[in-house]
Image 1 (spheres, rainbow, N blue to C red):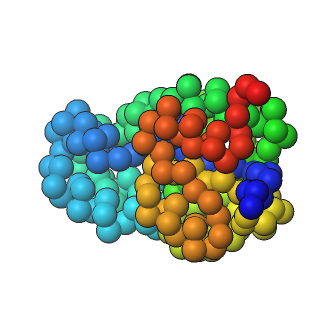
Image 2: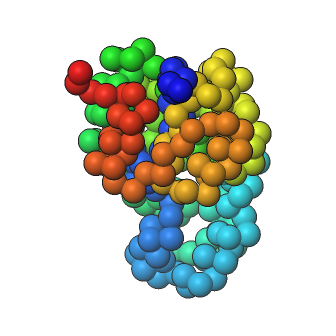
Length: 207
């Protein structure tokens, strides 16, 4: 039996097309750069970050609770600038999806957990609107992966059926959550295996 035709790609961003926006390694670097207690900062992050990613808190509010609950010798903007500078692209993955999008006329939908200001910075900095059609980001739809509502929102916004989608994410549990809705997934670990997996779904660069 042939596979359903692919009409859309659902795309995680951090860890696939960009570095993670604000992961443990970045927080560790920030703690060292600003002479902060990493354990305390990381525990605060664990408690408050979900609200930021879900669009229920601004970046300044998040940073104030994370770091500026006491007097510091640096400013919130200096800390936020450090956060922004942690982002970089994985150009090979971006180029691959751009080529496949053009060849197969695919809709591309970002399905990522990210806070609004970080997300908007990364969208602008790396020109993501040039190849992503829809942003069903957690900060915009106010729900986070693996909540099924984020995937349902992405389906509604892109007007495709679950069986018409391939979803790429570097966290296997998120592809498993989407699979429960009938969305086929690729657990991204490196460029070569993801390219091969896409080809197995019929998205081949050259015939």
